[in-house]
Amino acid sequence: MNQAAAIYEKSGVKGEELDLVKQTMKTVSDLLVRLYPALITIIFAIMAGCNLALLKKAATVFQLNLNVGEFITFRNPDLLVWVLISSGFSMLLPSPLVTTPALNILLLVALMYFVQGMAIVSVLISRQSISGVLRIVLYIMLLVQPYLAVLVAGIGLCDLWLDFRTPKTQENL
Image 1: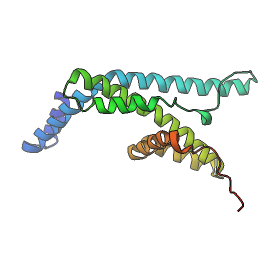
Image 2 (image 1 turned 180 degrees about the vertical axis):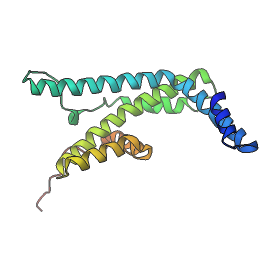
Image 3 (image 1 turned 135 degrees about the vertical axis):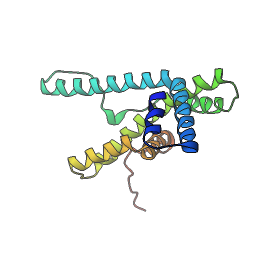
Image 4 (image 1 turned 90 degrees about the vertical axis):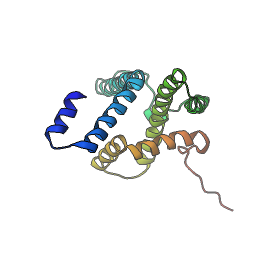
């Protein structure tokens, strides 16, 4: 943080703006320290998911019988919503001994609903005739853009009640 503050000072940031930058860096570093366990777990989950996807691709290339389910069928347990609700309400308590683990749990559960939302988006995209390049661009946008990531996690959560994956059949009246 001191090195970053020195860089800002050398670039001409002074006075109140420099104090604001230092305060922001302090806040971000405190938050990263609090979220460290969840961030490490998320990194391990991403690594495991990538390894599983590569293993599944290799199994199809080498024609091996690998019993791995399809990503589009991924669904979180229904009771996971209570973990989300309880950790969210635990964030309202004034004790950091409660809020820090609750924040980590909240982040991990949000990741799980994001993965379920990505499975739903994959189903919806596979129903449309979209080119491969456009699909890749869409997936990158969903992963990188924070507001879209929250929307995808919300879709994953709402799938509990709305079931986006089942095709809607029209009834003749």
